[in-house]
Each structure stands twice: as C-alpha cells, then as structure tokens.
Length: 124
Image (tube, rainbow, N blue to C red; front, side, top):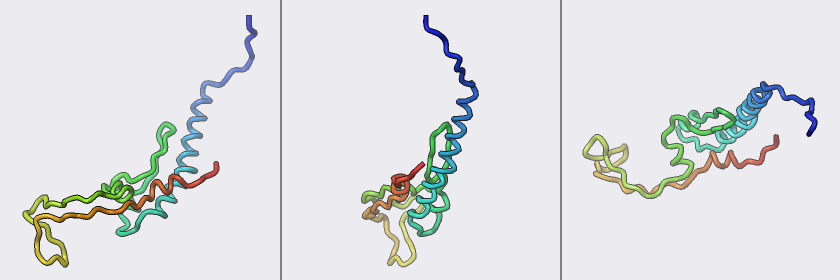
C-alpha cells in the first residue's frame, strides 16, 4: 500500500491563480497589444481608433473593435464589389458630376493593425 503524502492544496488556490492570470492578461498583455493596435491603426476619422478595446473573461483575452462595423474591412481589406443605393434611387456624393445607379468599387488593400499588434514579440 502506498503511503499518503501530507501535502494538501487549498481549494481556493485555483480561484487565486485564475484571478492572477486574468489580471495579467488584461493589465499586462492586453494593455500592450491594445497600445500597439492603437499605434498601428489607420487614423482617418479617429472612429476606429476610439472603438478599440480589450477585455478578459475566463482567461481569454479579446482585443478589437466593439462597435465599428468596418474594422474587419480595414484589417483584411475588401475585394471588388458593387455599391447600390439602399434608400434612394441613385447614389450621389460631393464632387460627383451626377447621381449614379451603382458604383463598381475596386476594393481596398488590407491595413493590418490588430494582427501586427498581436504578433509583436513580448516578454513576460
């Protein structure tokens, strides 16, 4: 028969370790990635920059835009596509010669800012 060891682990230790991991992810790694993403993001209107956030839940760190619907298009780029009017019969913008029924958009090149921030070498 094997002898029992006298070592016993406090059941609340897991909660303390999980809390420390969450804090480290949010305040150390999360802040670093968020800071780099804010440095790399294209700054046209500032809306995308202001929308960047970081959050930690159950030892999972998420960094990105919560409410800017074009963040993925900036990060990944877009393929050529057709733009059609939604609420009117034609599209018009300042400096346009005349209203048009559709626009053949050539697409946009990727401008990765989140991936660039994520892939930075970091030390713990």
